[in-house]
Length: 96
Image 1 (cartoon, rainbow, N blue to C red):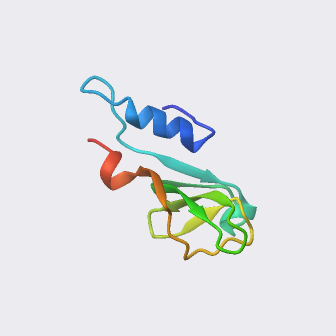
Image 2: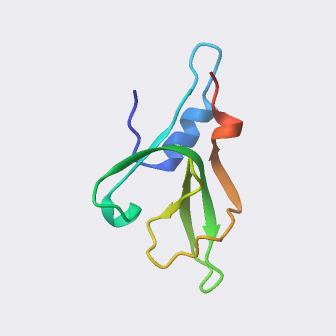
Image 3: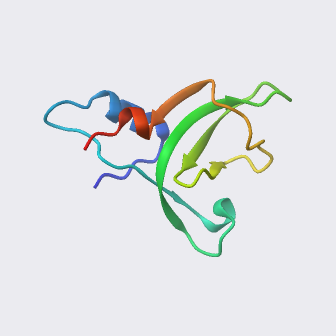
């Protein structure tokens, strides 16, 4: 197990995979104010990407977990925004 604090660290780790070291699973841990529950959740991460807010042109990260729920650190984020850059894709990047 390895804990990372930023999606760019995950991207570097994914890019460094080899026949001797690979990633089989990635989990996203979210606090209650982010996940809308009364507890912290740990869920399988399926996608992490960068989106652009059309209102002001700012860029921010979005995280999609199994089940299709999308999280962002921005409270006012439009959940329907599609990433212009995918940093992690479970389908593309995970190995078993």
